Length: 392
Ligand code: ADP
Ligand code: MG
Image (tube, rainbow, N blue to C red; front, side, top):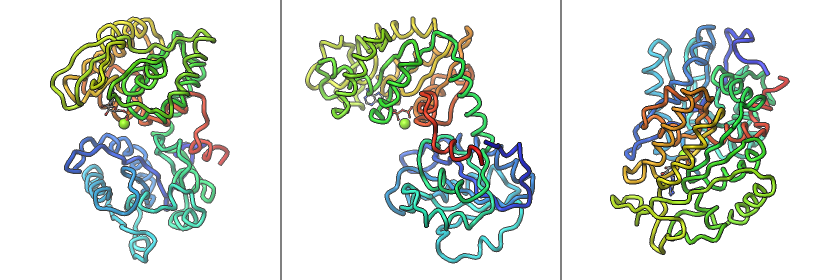
C-alpha cells in the first residue's frame, strides 16, 4: 500500500474519503469535532500540492435523505479550520451542477452525506462508476470505516489509482505493531452496548490476549449465558449461545474471561438513585448500569500488571453521574498502567469520550479513530478498506 506522502500527487482532482461522523448534541449541533480536526493533516498535505479536493463522508446511519443528517454544518465547521481554501457544498452530485467544472486548484467540494445514496452501502457498481467519474485519484483517510464494504471504501479503489491518507497511515502502523509484537501480559477490556458487533471479536482477541475483562451492556449477555437473572438490563438474547460457547472455549483453553461479580443497578438510566448488588441478587425491575467496586478492584489488579491494554466500550452508562464511576476509574487505571510502561489503545466513539471525560487522554498511548475497525484489525482480520488499497 502507498500513502500520500510516498507518492507525487499534484494538480489532480482527488476524491478523499474522510470520517466526519462527529458526535452531535440533542439539538443536532456538533458536540465534538475531533474527527474533523483529525482529517486536516491529509487535507492540508493535498492542498499544499495544488490539488482539487472532493470530500466524501457520512454522518449517522440515515435510511434516506433528511436534514438532520446533512453535512452542511460540517462544511461550515471545516471552512473555519481552512479559511484560505474555498469550500463548496454539493447537495446532490448525481444532478447537473457547475460546481465540478468551476472548481479551482486548492478548492474543496464536500459532497452531501454519502449514505443518502442507497448505492453506497450496497457497493453498487453503477454508483461506484458514477462517483469515480468525479476525480482522478482516490485517497482513503477514514480508518474507522475500513471494516465496511461500501462504495466509498472498497468500490472506488477498483477504478482509480488509490492511496492511504496520513491518519490511515498512523492507525495502520500503530496497530500493526501491536499485532506483530504485543508485550505481555496483554489485556483486552470490552464493554459498551453494540453487543452483536463486538461479540464477534472476543473469540479472536481471546486467542491473542491473556485476559479479557467484560463490562457494560456486553457483560449482561454473558451473565445471562451463565444463568444469572439480570432484570431489565440490556441484553442481546440472540447472542446468548455465542456467549456460552466463548465461555466454555476460554475455559478449555485456560484463557481468562473475567465478568463482573458485583454491579451498580438503577431503575432507569436517568435514575439518580443507584445500588450496589452482587450478581446473584439482581431483582426483576433492576437495570445493571455499571460495574461494582469489587469488580473494579479485580479488573484494576489485572490492568496494573498489563503491558499491552486494548480498551473498547464503556463499563457502564458513564454519561450519567450515578453510573459513571466504573468507567472513569478504569480509564484512570489504564492511564496509570501506561505511565508505568504499558502500551494502551482506546477505540470507540463513546470510550474515547469517557477517556476525555476522565481527564487522562494525554496519558493513553494511542487513541484510535476506529471502534469496530480497530477491534477487527487487532483481532487479526484484514480490513476490506485496507486490503482494497494494497497492491495498488
Ligand atoms: P463505543 O462507542 O466506545 O464503541 P458503544 O457504542 O458500544 O461503545 O457503547 C457505548 C454506550 O453504551 C454508552 O452510551 C453507554 O451509556 C452504554 N452502556 C454501557 N454500559 C451499559 C449498560 N450496562 N446498560 C446500558 N447501556 C450501557
Ligand atoms: Mg458508540
